Length: 495
Ligand code: BG6
Image 1 (cartoon, helix red, strand yellow):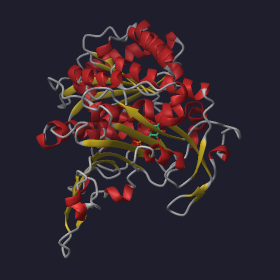
Image 2 (spheres, rainbow, N blue to C red):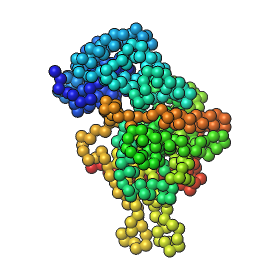
Image 3 (tube, rainbow, N blue to C red):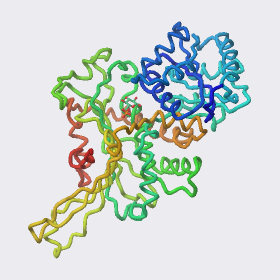
Image 4 (cartoon, rainbow, N blue to C red):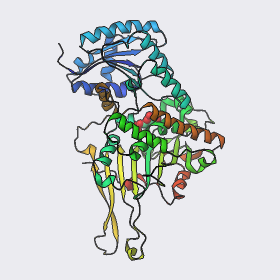
């Protein structure tokens, strides 16, 4: 009899031979297994596998040779499945009931849909028809992105899921919510009165959120070309970062209270429409160029499986205003793109300048105070301050106070999927997105897409290996600001 007793559940992994499962989910499950979580997994995909060959596939996805691997892999079972055929779910029900008893899982079930989006709804329907949801324990549905491609399709998908699961049972993944420093935003803001008291339009001049990538579209060309940077990154990850940075303190640190506050932010974002679009949102596409490591890369239009005349944006920058008391008049600038100069996600809070006073003449050149939340690759914080220049009485120099989360411990392993899977096993959906968050975010994206079309907004091209088109610089210059170069925001120094 197995002694592992924590968080028992059967995990039905749809898309078990896919890239995400191999790269992220199996390594995350292995970590949870080592922490004594009690689960068994049924891998589901179309291609044939035996339990043994599936266990080999899972084993190959773990980059370790530890002794426990054998016992971990024994908990993996496989069944070949045609998602659109209800009859292929019947044997699955039988196996699920058997494993439930064998591992003492209490009837708890996670249905993890790591599938092409067109299979989300049929999978949910057939899960229901087969009786898999009639279980003595709880049932959770984890669903990967994209959750729709606009508000209408997202609402239709949501309706179909709600025929099988309650809202509280649906765990919509935004893997950014599993990142350590994204989860740290609330602690930083609400456990430190020195920040919360200045976290408003009186003291903050602007907020800059960057999520840049060096990779191109790789093997996801056909998905990406229909999607673009706005829907691929802004609708979900970037909007969640905006919400967490801007939200009011929740009255209680409970799942629904936190989500309520995020929704209020989404509701307060000023809609973008019509001819306003050209002043608020920049869309770009990369041409060929050279990455910082010297690699020469081709243009987006020359990528494999991308149409030569594609107008899909691989870069977006935007200015949002949050029309509430706290953020009145403070621009939130966001930018994200592929084939940029660095892989980096960070949030820069720029504080207002010191008063312009002739008696302060010698401090004229002071840098604004910046608080930088480094989400990745380094995880930490930098606070940019000014101190007296050591050998000149009348001038200042900028200094940076740094905290680096991932340099404390060489074995530190920060994995978003491990955190999110663990939360789902525990029944904590705080770091998953609720339907109304998703819906408000889609409606904002829809208005941008519609305005782009109506106004025939052209693409601004940028060289691969750069930080995006110059129009994105003008977006800030118009307000008297500039993007803080990643190097000037001082990533924390590794130990
Ligand atoms: C995914 C997008 O959601 O996030 C990808 O579909 C993108 O296009 C990825 O590359 C970025 O995630 P991360 O964790 O590497 O910043």
